[in-house]
Length: 155
Image (cartoon, rainbow, N blue to C red; front, top):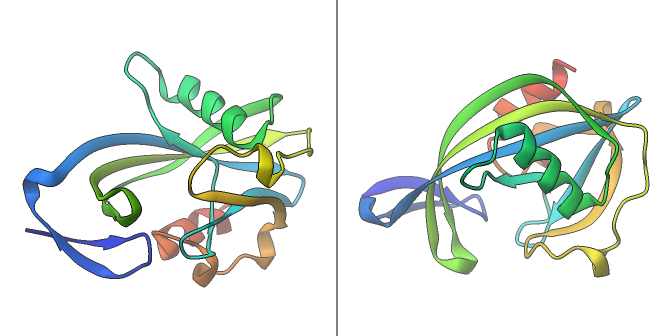
């Protein structure tokens, strides 16, 4: 059994054989002193645009695709790699357990128009918005709150 957190922040135990490898990439998309985030449906915390890397994609290709799919932002420049984490995670709504490898990049966008809830096709994302970085606390972040808060503070 592997001990991990689910999307509600609860500690759960899942059998080792249930876990799949999931490389993923996320962007801290900046526009001046603000960052693009969305609220998660399952716990109303914030998370960052991004997602799984598909076979044959580079991290950068996957990040641009995911940002476009989730936010509608097209004019995004990828900056530096801010950090990477390994995370054992259980997504309860789909009964999926993942050994995730998450890569976080600093990104920049001059565009500010974001998709509305009716345009977002992701099953977990809602309420895209630009938040001032200084207003985000560790308690606001859905997963890996201390680690990601520390990355945000480095911006």
